[in-house]
Amino acid sequence: MGRRVRVKAPATVSNLNCGFDVLGLAINEPFDTVEIELTRTGRIEIAEIRGCDTLSRDPAENVVGPVLRAMATSMGVDTGFRVIIEKGIHPGSGIGSSAASSAAVAFAANLLFDNAFSLTDLVGFAMEGERLASGSPHADNVAPSLFGGITLVRSYEPLDVIRLHLPPELFVVVILPDTEVKTSVARGLLDRQLPLQTAVRQWGNVGGLIAGLYSEDYELISRSLEDFVAEPRRAGLIPGFSDMKRSALASGALGAGISGSGPSVFALCRGEASAREVMESMSRVMHGEGVGFMAYLSPVRSQGAVIC
Ligand code: HSE
Image (cartoon, rainbow, N blue to C red):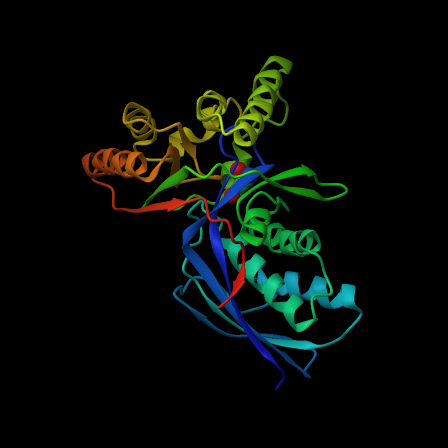
């Protein structure tokens, strides 16, 4: 048996309303942990998956398989891997469950390969896990899970990931209802084409949000947190979504919306005290709906995947 590394990678909130498939941020909790070691078998063996009994240990059906395969191929080596996965993030939650496992295993394997790859390279490999999980190799969860902070995927071909400026007072509330939404299903609801007018509104907000982050202009950040593309199609998948969003804004959130493809709902807030109030008001809505849920409050996490 070879060297062994253990890495954790954080949950992420993607899209941030206006940035479908291009914007995302990392939060402190929950996270996935992966332990890997190199073997001489030439095979990928998923020895154990802790914390989730619905995921397959077959490397052809688990996100870590294509990620490790792509990395070994790129290195030109026929090494084997033995992997243990600890799922802290429930699959189908909208906070980057498949992305965190993909990011963690890419980061861990890179350590065993003596850091042969850049973080952007690792995003490219981790996208292979996303391709398996949802049928679409999107990077807006794997990028912040690897880089930390808030990231922009400026381009997919060639891959160009930018870590954006992080205003210090930004806090994130995530409410995860006790339901599952498959990303592939949520993506299937989206229009394949957009009216020009809708695109103009959406990219105006992307520019506004990024300008707001760099100038630490919380008002501008707030005005820019609108979604005319995914939210109108997906809101119906989430119990209590409109009421939760309304109550978050009424309690002082800068903005609120669907986290990734849902069912998690996020709110961005200025300062921890405001975030706490927003979390309480969103939680009251969920109690009223009679749906079980988890609530998370976190600053935007500046670190991505790390050894643990
Ligand atoms: N950008 C992706 C989507 C994220 O909204 O489908 C999925 O987690």
